[in-house]
Amino acid sequence: MMDETAERMGFFTDTTLCIGCKACEVACKEWNELPSDGYEFTGMSYDNTKELSGTTWRHVAFVEQDQRWLMESDVCKHCTHAGCLDVCPTGALMRTEFGTVVLQEDICNGCGYCVVACPFGVVAQRQDTKTMGKCTLCYDRLKVGEEPACAKACPTESIQFGVVTELRARAAERVEKVLEQPRYEGARLYLEDPGDGIGGGGSMFLLLDAPEKYGLPPAPVVATRELPAMWTAAFVAAGVLFGGIVLAMVGRK
Amino acid sequence: MNGSTKPGYYGHPMIKPPEWTDLIPVYFWAGGMSGASATMALMQRLRGNEPLATTYVYAAAVGTALSGFCLIADLKRPDRFMNMLRVFKPTSPMSMGVYIFSVFGGATMTAALCSLFGVAKPLGRIAEVVAGFVGPLMSVYTAVLISDTVVPAWYGARLAMPALFAATSASTAGGVGLLFGPADANSSARRLALMGGAAVPVTLQNVHRAVGPFQDRAYKDGQAGPLAHAARAMNIAGTVCALFAGRAPVLGRVAGALLLAGGLAERFAVLRAGCNSASDPAYTIHAQRSGVSSADGS
Image (cartoon, rainbow over all chains, first blue to last red; front, side, top):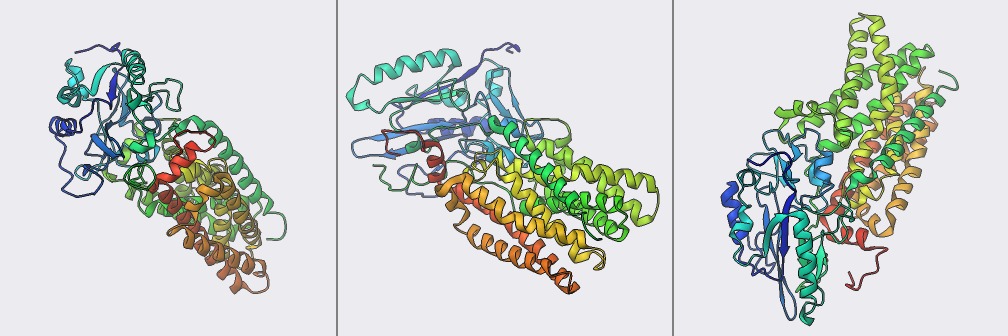
């Protein structure tokens, strides 16, 4: 058992190393006992998984380009400022001692607010339990000192698990090295910056093209950041409504 | 370049569209009407218009019951509704909303029951005062609820949305008074209907302006467009009828029905617009890329 002062843990997914084998998808489903999502042919390259969902917590994207093939294993970002966690009205979503964001499915009442609060389209409804579901960063495995199933299964170390601050340093080093090669000129880090709109991700990525090419939002922002302004606007509107009703009293009955 | 000319990743949604059912716009509509009705009830009581006060006390209670039913029935696990009361989270508009709803709902129900059975009059009056002051917040908090999301059509209009919800609440609450209130004592309902009816197009225009022309397509595509047209037509017709309701009481009834239906259609239009803008990655990309010069040409 790790104690309350455990360090913040996360993923660094280096897409230059991904071979699209989907071992992460399978390992995740196996460990977390997630049901199959059926057999559907999408025509989206080799991607019949399509997206992260309530029962798919790792998703490998395949982007066929003229001279190359991009592959990226997507996962919950375990945001520093997590929209899903902010808006959850039951406390089902919680921050763990590892700095990860976990959805307690035995508490969730399926209100669906987290679904529209996630900048990455990660959280979604589970058809089997009717609650929402998402990656736990293998909270149960972390508890006993094991690494998450996906990272364990990854044969190329494209998925790297570790302490977030160390991963950030490793990612910065790696992108510098990758950029030395002309064929990787579009390489960039994604969600490694604590100054971005979500305060940086617990999951960060080395991408070879713009984030949107992989289906990732280019500049994600946690909506809660603007909440004080929204409530101010709401109180003004409520005040005007009250005033309007008072005004309606002027005149005959 | 992607083997696909569609935006993003094969045109696949970049964020998840709401999982909410059609009960949610009904919940917004009923809650909005109910909130403004509670304030109307209080005002009628204060100026001694007892018949109209009674109408509004019941309207607020019925609206609360309907909105509460929709809120709970939309949960994928309604049996766990009470889990919302185990935390108090200022960062969650839904958590705050549940407490606003609980106080407001308790007050409107108490007021209506006291009135219905003619018992505990002082308690009923206290409940009416509480409901009357919490009412406007009940009417507009749902605007914060949908704006505090990553859905571009809603988040982009986050500062303009509460005014639209307040305007629709006023027009629908005015409509309730015209439809169900005593024809000889509902002039204040008529005035509220006129104010709300006039404010709806103005505040709606502000929502369109706030999101900008690109994002505004979400409010015109699919079902959102026809719903918005229907809402506008009913709102205009209802407002015009309300204008002449003083001459023929039947026009007041028609105006009330039109304003209520128009307000409902407007809530549906806003919800559908959000679904549109979440389902097409172009909206998210545009919202996050505009103003950012990018060598990626995205």
